[in-house]
Image 1 (cartoon, helix red, strand yellow):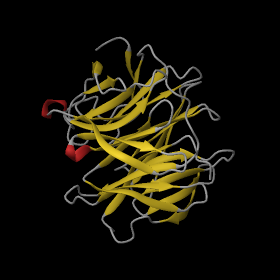
Image 2: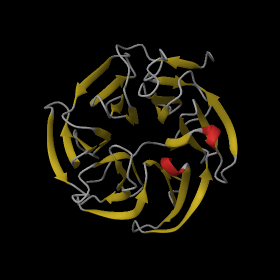
Image 3: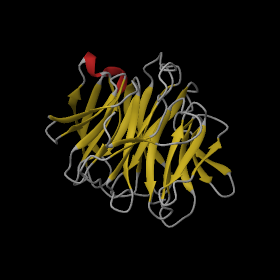
Length: 287
């Protein structure tokens, strides 16, 4: 394996690792295991790791600006979570008419709004959507008809939102207005069959997108025109997401899944990559 790729030494592996997020105020990288379900964390200063079980599938966790608690995406909808007290408080379910759906993957835009996708839990129905959670804790459905909604990220200037339908092997781009309106939906990338399926993604300081390949065993970097610049193979088939972390935002952490790859020893590991470029500063939810 490339010496610039490190596997975090920790007990166990993630059934479905996802949603890495760097919280600089804590000096901690958080990520989830959707199917355990559990919240995981890594203290970058001392290397300490931890995990906490959740009562239902947990798709993502995002810090709240100026507060110690978080917003999380669950099967039952949006909720706040106090880590120290281990206390969940519901905000609301954006899809009460789709009880077999769950929230899956989310990011915060420059105005402090959360953009979160959803999907059918069993992945047998095209019932996913893209939702926007505003700082006043109200939400709006912004797009529909996703098989597996995945990987929101934004252009460097914040004017483009990228969002995937993994089931359709397509990454879409939208024009994002200052008021949160979306227009101009168009395909940004279509993954060939031998690439696997596009999963989670992030944006670096040069405006390029890093996209995880579920079933493709790699992480790829694309320029803003959608041209492939670099592909980094990893020793597991199901790569799920990625996030830059650390004081210099120059440590790229990559999640993976043991699901469907139980025979692969490293499947479900958290990887750290040195890719020679830094990421954009993480954002907290403004609500």
